Length: 177
Image 1 (tube, rainbow, N blue to C red):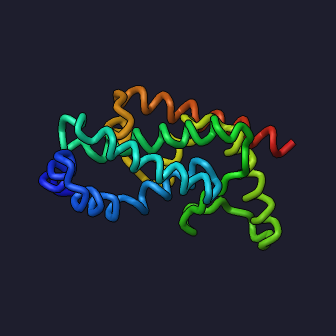
Image 2 (cartoon, rainbow, N blue to C red; image 1 turned 90 degrees about the vertical axis):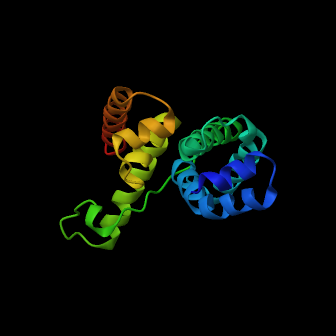
């Protein structure tokens, strides 16, 4: 993203902001959908993300930190969506074929059952745990990139990622009982 475009948007240029939205819309929506697991909620969170970004853009001090700043807004919008919703919906993460869990050749029915178990387990996680797992495993961001996006130290990312993985393991064990 060109810092000049961000600076123009900061000064109130709606066309510049529209250009920013067009380049970031898909990423923000995919992140929200993966965390929330529901298209309508993801659309609402995406819209709220960009409304909040427009309102708060004049306060952004460093245009080079725009993506990290927008990532934090996205995760906060997802938190708010989950609070408003008050219930948990199943969530599905589509992994590339190389990352799909091995099913031992059990066939499509077994794969679907395993995916449902994973979805229910993932839905049990807190939004923070979901977000860190999505950023690292789904969006394939490095620890430093996640730290930048969330505005936390690298060590905190590592500990949260470790905690989230263990929480997912425990949730999977509960679902497999």
